[in-house]
Length: 77
Image: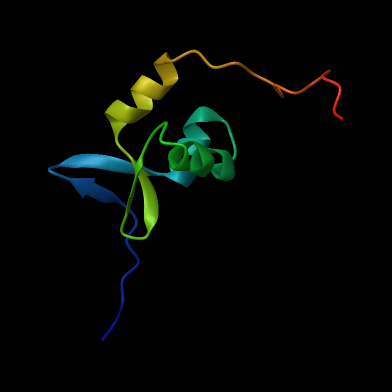
């Protein structure tokens, strides 16, 4: 018996992207993609990993995001 590694995921003939694939497409780290998924900004947790549909990816890309650290320059304490 051999176990094959799954290299692509799809539901109803719609390809789903992994966090690693989305990170390469958006030029951000995979951990940031997973954080966005955990925050509910995109994706769903299936088959033991975060999977993102093309429509969710396009909606995420269309939404403007602020860049940088929101706490930069603020006094703490």
